[in-house]
Length: 391
Ligand code: FAS
Ligand code: PHB
Image 1: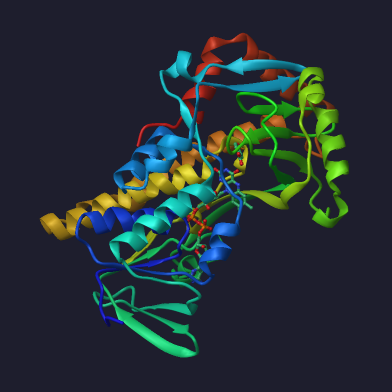
Image 2: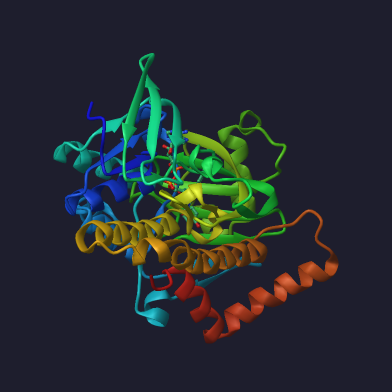
């Protein structure tokens, strides 16, 4: 194993893999250190909707061929309230669309192109630790098959998600965090049945939020809002389908094709931002720096814009010997992150049942939805955030 590289990337999720490919294409050497196995990473069911900016980056990384073939372009979405579905016309209102293509597939495609170009990834790298980030000679250590390894580098990209080691390496007196934890979770089910509708359906219902999504014309993804203390074992498939149907409009409930779940999990919802996203030679990207509730389908897409900014800055450092991009990275990324945090928080407030909400809160929620359905300006505001604000 080489004892030196230019950029060490921690984490083989979408952030790390996308950054690795964009740097590789610019001739910059990287190594990715991933704590889990490749199969474990590919086994996680996560995001489903890509903004055009993320699609363009995946194409630029040379991993867009299957996405172009199998991805589903969507011109709009529906919001169901009071048993009535209202369509938000992304294309008509913004001229833009989104691409429905699962994060698992994005990850798989990026892993394939990385392996094809021979760039190194160490899976099951244990005890990754980052050293000397405040100097010009950072290094990273880890354990693999019981052996301690070390590599020197110019920069470390912390792409290791919310529970990773990178954010924890930032000096506590420098790091500021902002957080809101929501009093409910999402119970998600993956099923090999055709989707109930051509487009996604976001549901606001007195029993709780629900979402009808998909991965292809034959594989669907459904969610229902659930209490934080619920266990996935308490939810049989039948109980899940009955609960979902009780929240859908009459037509969707009648047309829903149910079946045996091939994945079932509960995800907590939180809004979280860590500032700054850089200290010395360490740069945070993706979930390592921020989390959004999935209501606005922003998580994966924010990881993409972080990686766009960071890859441009690193390429500028090596190609033009300029650190202007690196010095501006945190502020530039945070400007877009906070707008997506706002939108994701707003969509979550709009569509979920909050256990402690007052009668006034529920009246405001109803007024917000009725205003949305009656105002082209309000629908345009939702649409321009959902398809993705400019990079
Ligand atoms: P990831 O968390 O994807 O990847 C980080 C990688 O780093 C992981 O492979 C991890 O194993 C590795 N790692 C962690 N610690 C390490 C260490 N110490 N050493 C080495 N490696 C380490 N977003 C949406 O847009 N829509 C959704 O529906 C949606 N659903 C989600 C459901 C769940 C349960 C979760 C947790 C997230 C969901 N997200 C969703 C957000 C999700 O898609 C993230 O935004 C996306 O995975 C971000 O990618 P990364 O930044 O690469 O982080
Ligand atoms: C998904 O398909 O998993 C999905 C889609 C849109 C969201 C959240 C999740 O807002």
